[in-house]
Picture 1: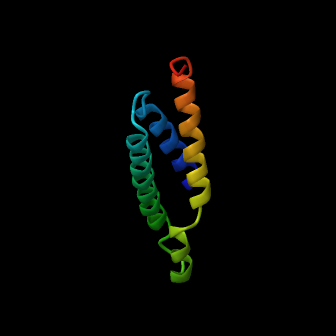
Picture 2: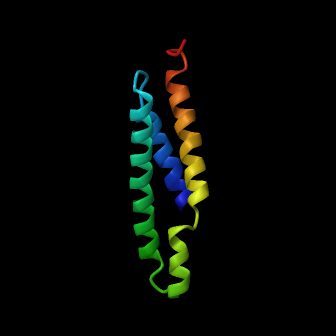
Length: 89
């Protein structure tokens, strides 16, 4: 589930960041979108794990964080490059 949420967050971030956006603003936008979508995935994961033991629920916070981060970055770069490849010279 987190991998799919990371993919969606990366696509949205790739559409939001446009050429001419300063590097600091682009990083801030990417981080804020990532935090928002990660919190959403955490809430969904908690609701799905109603009958899970308490020790296993603690793992929900970190389970799938690396696929989330890498898919977010990969699809953000793919979408941004696909949309704006002819503009950067």
